[in-house]
Image 1 (spheres, helix red, strand yellow):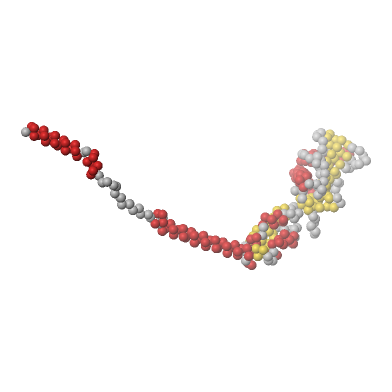
Image 2 (cartoon, rainbow, N blue to C red):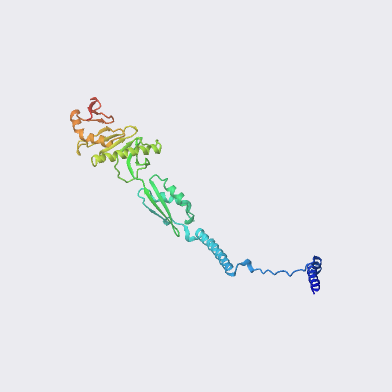
Length: 311
């Protein structure tokens, strides 16, 4: 029995060995690879974007075409419609002018006749208007459908400028202005700011003039009205011809040299001491206040010079 069992065990082991032999396994494998069935890949229509997306695209395209069409016809209407054209002078509104004539303003818009108001170059017309001497600043606006509005700020003259044997007006910025007809204007006459000087120099000298007129009024109200003439041809010495120094009824004209600084202090000293100087020297022709420690009083051209020490 033991022998039989041993034979069975050996036979079983041999069978297991034979069942795992590579050549036996190789014989059982197919001689070729079978073609496998391809896997079907389903693709979403329109690259995964649904109908709502394309509906939005369609709506945007339609809106774009409609907007472009509206813009085309709208632009054509604004540029060429008869209801937008500047045809008559009364379509230009003008405000703020007193000296500047309406004709002078309309002349700047001659090239805009029969043109749409949209095509009027506002900045260019504003610059042209400001070239008119009496115009300090201007604004130009479109008033649809077919009007233009012009607002002017005119210059304010502050003195008469002596220009040779003629007198013109001048403003605080040194702009020389033609004298308007029919206007009764009373200003001091200023020398040394003729049109021969560059605009910048005229403006600096007129700033000195304005400072002087303001300072004398601070010392005694209304004193600037007693100034009849000012010479600022010498940048280092403002020379003024004034009356009423000894009182409102005094019509004596006196020439005073003020220099270019401390107008308030010098004029106060003049007002406080003029009566005494006049009592000492008689009729005063001129007074020189340029120096820091003395006042030069000239009674007249032939009488010489009297010097008074400044207190």
